[in-house]
Length: 196
Picture 1 (cartoon, one colour):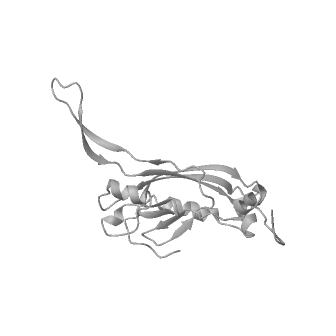
Picture 2 (cartoon, helix red, strand yellow):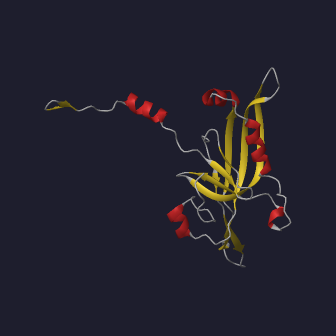
Picture 3 (cartoon, rainbow, N blue to C red):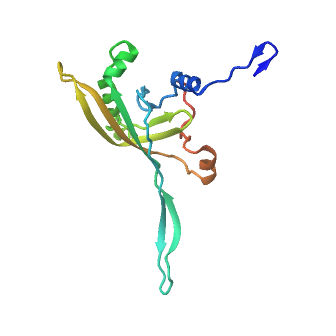
Protein backbone atom coordinates (compact mmCIF):
# COMPACT_ATOMS: atom_id res chain seq x y z
CA UNK A 1 0.00 0.00 0.00
CA UNK A 2 1.46 3.40 -0.99
CA UNK A 3 0.48 6.78 0.46
CA UNK A 4 2.15 9.48 -1.68
CA UNK A 5 5.86 8.75 -1.46
CA UNK A 6 5.64 6.89 1.88
CA UNK A 7 5.17 3.14 1.79
CA UNK A 8 3.28 1.60 4.74
CA UNK A 9 5.20 -1.31 6.22
CA UNK A 10 3.30 -4.10 7.92
CA UNK A 11 4.87 -6.35 10.51
CA UNK A 12 5.30 -9.94 9.39
CA UNK A 13 4.69 -12.96 11.66
CA UNK A 14 8.47 -13.55 11.71
CA UNK A 15 9.03 -9.96 12.91
CA UNK A 16 6.52 -10.49 15.73
CA UNK A 17 8.17 -13.78 16.70
CA UNK A 18 11.63 -12.18 16.89
CA UNK A 19 10.24 -9.25 18.89
CA UNK A 20 8.62 -11.74 21.28
CA UNK A 21 11.90 -13.66 21.72
CA UNK A 22 13.83 -10.45 22.39
CA UNK A 23 11.39 -9.27 25.08
CA UNK A 24 12.25 -10.30 28.62
CA UNK A 25 9.13 -11.26 30.52
CA UNK A 26 9.01 -10.31 34.20
CA UNK A 27 10.37 -13.11 36.35
CA UNK A 28 8.79 -14.52 39.46
CA UNK A 29 10.51 -13.44 42.68
CA UNK A 30 10.62 -14.76 46.24
CA UNK A 31 11.13 -12.17 49.00
CA UNK A 32 11.91 -13.54 52.49
CA UNK A 33 10.02 -11.23 54.88
CA UNK A 34 12.15 -12.32 57.85
CA UNK A 35 15.64 -11.80 56.41
CA UNK A 36 14.82 -9.27 53.68
CA UNK A 37 16.67 -11.40 51.11
CA UNK A 38 15.10 -11.88 47.70
CA UNK A 39 15.78 -14.13 44.71
CA UNK A 40 14.42 -14.13 41.19
CA UNK A 41 13.72 -17.53 39.69
CA UNK A 42 16.13 -18.31 36.86
CA UNK A 43 13.33 -19.33 34.48
CA UNK A 44 9.60 -18.74 34.97
CA UNK A 45 7.67 -21.99 35.44
CA UNK A 46 5.81 -23.27 32.40
CA UNK A 47 2.95 -24.53 34.59
CA UNK A 48 1.72 -23.06 37.88
CA UNK A 49 -0.95 -25.13 39.68
CA UNK A 50 -3.08 -22.99 42.03
CA UNK A 51 -5.69 -24.67 44.25
CA UNK A 52 -8.60 -23.35 46.31
CA UNK A 53 -11.01 -25.46 48.37
CA UNK A 54 -14.33 -24.45 49.89
CA UNK A 55 -15.31 -26.29 53.11
CA UNK A 56 -18.90 -26.89 54.16
CA UNK A 57 -20.39 -28.40 57.31
CA UNK A 58 -22.87 -31.13 56.42
CA UNK A 59 -25.96 -31.36 58.55
CA UNK A 60 -28.18 -34.43 58.40
CA UNK A 61 -31.82 -34.36 59.45
CA UNK A 62 -33.97 -37.47 59.88
CA UNK A 63 -36.29 -37.94 56.92
CA UNK A 64 -34.55 -35.33 54.76
CA UNK A 65 -33.42 -36.73 51.39
CA UNK A 66 -30.20 -34.73 51.38
CA UNK A 67 -27.62 -33.07 53.61
CA UNK A 68 -27.81 -29.35 54.32
CA UNK A 69 -24.58 -27.55 53.43
CA UNK A 70 -23.50 -24.65 55.61
CA UNK A 71 -20.41 -22.69 54.60
CA UNK A 72 -17.57 -23.23 57.09
CA UNK A 73 -14.47 -21.66 55.53
CA UNK A 74 -11.96 -21.84 52.71
CA UNK A 75 -8.61 -23.55 52.80
CA UNK A 76 -5.62 -21.33 52.11
CA UNK A 77 -4.53 -20.91 48.50
CA UNK A 78 -1.99 -23.63 47.65
CA UNK A 79 0.49 -23.24 44.79
CA UNK A 80 3.11 -25.64 43.47
CA UNK A 81 6.07 -23.79 41.99
CA UNK A 82 8.36 -25.87 39.77
CA UNK A 83 11.67 -24.13 39.07
CA UNK A 84 14.20 -25.37 36.53
CA UNK A 85 17.86 -24.55 37.23
CA UNK A 86 20.51 -25.14 34.54
CA UNK A 87 24.03 -24.00 35.47
CA UNK A 88 25.46 -24.67 32.00
CA UNK A 89 22.92 -22.38 30.31
CA UNK A 90 23.10 -19.73 33.04
CA UNK A 91 26.92 -19.56 32.97
CA UNK A 92 26.89 -19.07 29.19
CA UNK A 93 24.01 -16.58 29.18
CA UNK A 94 25.55 -14.43 31.94
CA UNK A 95 29.16 -14.90 30.74
CA UNK A 96 30.22 -15.69 34.31
CA UNK A 97 29.76 -18.59 36.77
CA UNK A 98 26.38 -18.62 38.54
CA UNK A 99 26.11 -20.17 42.03
CA UNK A 100 23.05 -22.38 41.70
CA UNK A 101 23.74 -23.94 45.10
CA UNK A 102 23.10 -20.54 46.71
CA UNK A 103 19.58 -20.53 45.21
CA UNK A 104 19.07 -24.08 46.52
CA UNK A 105 20.15 -23.07 50.05
CA UNK A 106 17.85 -20.01 49.86
CA UNK A 107 14.88 -22.30 49.13
CA UNK A 108 15.89 -24.78 51.85
CA UNK A 109 16.09 -21.96 54.42
CA UNK A 110 12.41 -21.18 53.76
CA UNK A 111 11.54 -24.56 55.31
CA UNK A 112 13.19 -24.05 58.72
CA UNK A 113 12.48 -21.74 61.68
CA UNK A 114 14.45 -18.54 62.05
CA UNK A 115 16.69 -17.78 65.03
CA UNK A 116 14.35 -15.86 67.29
CA UNK A 117 12.95 -15.72 70.80
CA UNK A 118 9.46 -14.77 69.66
CA UNK A 119 6.53 -17.10 69.06
CA UNK A 120 6.36 -16.12 65.39
CA UNK A 121 10.08 -16.85 65.07
CA UNK A 122 9.60 -20.51 66.02
CA UNK A 123 8.20 -21.28 62.58
CA UNK A 124 9.64 -21.00 59.07
CA UNK A 125 9.63 -17.47 57.63
CA UNK A 126 6.75 -15.98 55.71
CA UNK A 127 7.70 -14.78 52.27
CA UNK A 128 6.20 -12.87 49.40
CA UNK A 129 5.75 -14.77 46.15
CA UNK A 130 5.53 -12.19 43.40
CA UNK A 131 5.04 -12.85 39.70
CA UNK A 132 4.27 -9.42 38.19
CA UNK A 133 0.89 -9.35 36.50
CA UNK A 134 -0.07 -12.81 37.74
CA UNK A 135 0.32 -13.38 41.45
CA UNK A 136 1.31 -11.56 44.62
CA UNK A 137 0.75 -13.65 47.77
CA UNK A 138 2.17 -13.78 51.29
CA UNK A 139 2.97 -17.46 51.83
CA UNK A 140 4.89 -20.11 53.75
CA UNK A 141 6.63 -23.17 52.36
CA UNK A 142 4.83 -26.45 53.01
CA UNK A 143 7.04 -28.74 50.90
CA UNK A 144 10.26 -28.69 48.89
CA UNK A 145 11.58 -31.37 46.55
CA UNK A 146 14.73 -31.41 44.44
CA UNK A 147 15.32 -33.56 41.38
CA UNK A 148 19.05 -33.53 40.56
CA UNK A 149 19.27 -34.24 36.84
CA UNK A 150 22.87 -33.74 35.70
CA UNK A 151 26.27 -33.75 37.43
CA UNK A 152 29.70 -32.48 36.40
CA UNK A 153 32.02 -35.34 35.38
CA UNK A 154 35.05 -33.48 36.77
CA UNK A 155 33.81 -32.22 40.14
CA UNK A 156 30.58 -34.13 40.77
CA UNK A 157 28.70 -30.86 41.41
CA UNK A 158 25.07 -30.59 40.35
CA UNK A 159 24.74 -28.89 36.96
CA UNK A 160 20.97 -29.14 36.41
CA UNK A 161 18.16 -29.58 38.93
CA UNK A 162 14.47 -28.94 39.33
CA UNK A 163 13.14 -27.51 42.59
CA UNK A 164 9.46 -28.01 43.37
CA UNK A 165 8.33 -25.63 46.12
CA UNK A 166 4.87 -26.08 47.63
CA UNK A 167 3.59 -22.82 49.07
CA UNK A 168 0.47 -21.92 51.04
CA UNK A 169 -1.04 -18.47 51.53
CA UNK A 170 -1.11 -16.97 55.02
CA UNK A 171 -3.65 -14.30 55.84
CA UNK A 172 -4.29 -12.04 58.80
CA UNK A 173 -7.65 -10.77 57.59
CA UNK A 174 -10.88 -12.13 56.15
CA UNK A 175 -10.98 -12.36 52.36
CA UNK A 176 -14.27 -11.72 50.59
CA UNK A 177 -15.65 -12.76 47.23
CA UNK A 178 -15.68 -9.13 46.11
CA UNK A 179 -11.98 -8.66 46.93
CA UNK A 180 -11.03 -11.81 45.03
CA UNK A 181 -13.20 -10.73 42.09
CA UNK A 182 -11.34 -7.41 41.99
CA UNK A 183 -7.76 -8.52 42.73
CA UNK A 184 -7.59 -12.24 41.95
CA UNK A 185 -4.28 -13.66 43.19
CA UNK A 186 -2.69 -10.22 43.62
CA UNK A 187 -3.28 -9.78 47.34
CA UNK A 188 -0.32 -9.43 49.68
CA UNK A 189 -1.31 -9.06 53.33
CA UNK A 190 1.41 -6.48 53.87
CA UNK A 191 1.74 -2.89 52.67
CA UNK A 192 3.48 -2.51 49.28
CA UNK A 193 7.20 -3.24 49.46
CA UNK A 194 9.85 -1.13 47.73
CA UNK A 195 10.91 -2.45 44.34
CA UNK A 196 13.91 -4.77 44.38
